Amino acid sequence: MSGLKITEFSVHDIRFPTNVTGDGTDAMNKECDYSAAYIVLKTNSDLKGQGMTFTIGRGNDIVCYAIEQIANRIVGKELDPIFNDMGAFFDFLVSDPQHRWLGPEKGVIHLATAAVNNAVWDLLAKHEKKPLWKLVVDWTPEQFVKATSFRYITDAITKEEALALLKEKEAGKKAREEEVIKKGYPAYTTSVGWLGYSDEKVVRLTKEALNQGFNHFKLKVGADPEDDLRRGRLIRSIIDDKANLPAGRVIEPRTIEGKNAGPAGCVLMVDANQVWDVPQAIEYMKKLEPLKPWFIEEPTAPDDAVGHAAIRKALKEINIGVATGEHAHNRMVFKQLLQLDAIDVCQIDSCRVGGVNELLSIMLMAAKYGVPVCPHAGGVGLCEYVIHLSLIDYICVSGEMERNVLEFVDHLHEHFLYPVSINSQGRYNVPLDPKGGYSIDMYEESMKEYTYPEGSYWVAAAEAEKRGEAPPIPKHL
Image 1 (cartoon, one colour):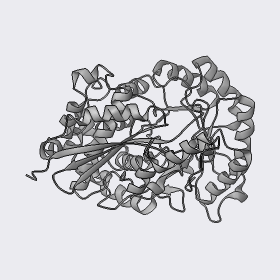
Image 2 (cartoon, rainbow, N blue to C red):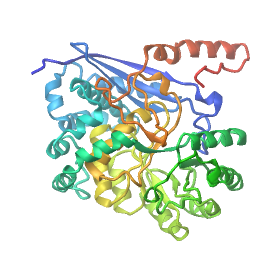
Image 3 (cartoon, rainbow, N blue to C red):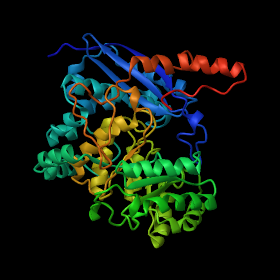
Image 4 (cartoon, rainbow, N blue to C red):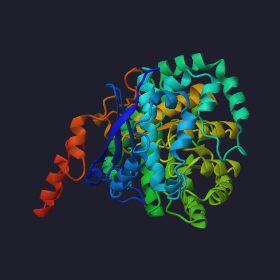
């Protein structure tokens, strides 16, 4: 027994002023200051666990308050019993009756649950001196199932079915692990297509992304169909020209099969960020059909599984798929999306649902229903998190990465001790540092500068506003 216990915690409201440069802008979210509601768990040793959830600015303080309420419940708890049964720990986190009344398992209280739960998983991985993905990959199928949340989803997948699925993949785990470490995990970029970017910036970023090895690109849409067509055709004119591809770039046919790839082997996706009603989504996407996107992401309200199913059925006629998940509250919403055959792509988010336990259950359901997992990322810290999830899905659960792509947005990685990186083939490098845990340790200097409202950046911004001046543009932007 280690004798380790959680002794205290600190919570931090950290906001980055991405709104000053238009990063993160889309048809729904026109003002975005990428923010982290961030927790540091301390123990009676040097071991610390970091965790966070993501917001886009205002309201981050509300999530921070909720994190404090949940974290108060685990102060003084010994870590050995938690580490030995992470599934039971998740049940404990979501079982407080008065907290459940605020959800249950959705909204601000679940965002806060994710931050606390992610911090404990980070503690466990650091304690075992493994990156989080490696911690889970090295588990037996029985250990994997024990850590997974099955409450409310056994009509979609049972523990017995999950165990059989994992055992079926067990023999190839070592080979898949070696392959992905060698090649990297496939990625796509959203950095080229924010709604607030000028045409000149879109052209520059698209060409840069091609040179970085990307061949999957996402465009934000939903404000105006004619302008969306124009912007989409602008990107298509660049990515469909073979002359713009790096010398020697080889795109494997299997990775673009059924994705409406252009003549150069590049794929375009579009994302509406929930702005449409169901009939409106269908009609709007018919207007964007000339762009030949692989899928439309978040075409309508994220809770509307029936609506997504109707959109998917209608768009099948023009060979456009449907993707969603970044705002799906919990495993139960994903269950309904999968049971109703409503999505072609399952977009889990590391912070929207309640943490790793729940994400494991969603991966298992997606594998059973044959839907590829392509996580939502970007923001701040999300890329650092989700590479671990995609590696777990590939090595343990689905055994597939040929058709999967993991979102990459090139923002704010420099604020983390263990940042993600992309190789020359447009793939995520696999995090291997045994000290990295869940890869979310943030530099103290960054936390001091961007803590809201007392951080040095926000003090300077408030002073500029008093003088009637524009806020300062941070050097990293």
